[in-house]
Amino acid sequence: MDMTIRDTFGLLWRKYFNNAELPISFYYTNEEGHAEKVRRGSGLICLIRALSEVRKGRALCFDAESIGCPGGRRYAGFADKLMPNFEYFLSCGIPGRLKGERYKKSPDLVKEVMKLAPAFKAPSRFIVFKRWDSLEPSDDPAVVIFFAQPDVLAGLFTLANFDEAEPNGVFAPFGAGCSSIIQYPYLEGKAARPRGVIGMFDVSARPHVPPDMLTFSVPIIKFRRMIGNAEESFLITDSWHRVQERIK
Image (cartoon, rainbow, N blue to C red; front, side, top):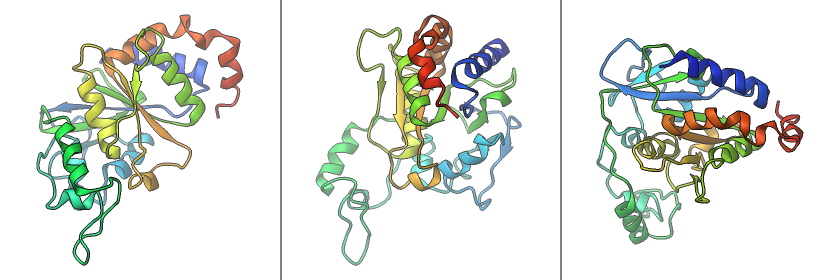
């Protein structure tokens, strides 16, 4: 990790976003020792819930065994199989056997959704999460994740689109909370035109985040561009300053 990038962002964040909540980041590695290893049975079963600790500054490392939620394992790239009857679980359920979440209209529609779902396999044994200010030279962040209130989200969204002609420089795919902050933005980092991802619309994940927050996740390659563009963008205008005054 280039410490100049870490520190430059910190200065810009304080200057234009009133030092709002810092983002977290993640990367994959085969090396142990980059962060506290989460053990099975530690109580940090849900990744989204565990990330509340990372947001406070606690660096955490997970592998396939330490993520207790099947969805979390899948969207972190540590598993490729779906639970039995997943098409019923995501839709109407099976009376007397399986409660359905009713996020899709029918089991057949879920099957079509899964045909379009991206394939994703973790490139290494561990996934490490750290808050931005905790990053060290030995870290190599792949994705930056903001837990953002609306005004902060508006600024990040607009900055991500600053150097884009195509109107969808940011997108909001349907999926689990984990997919919106891990799978989708990580895969965007491999794309010819990386995009930002707005997420955490997953109703099942919402209880684990503040009620006034969504997420904005961006691959590091695009995040570096956002940092480089900041001081020639709308952030220096009176329009933004009026919004900035409301950011706590």
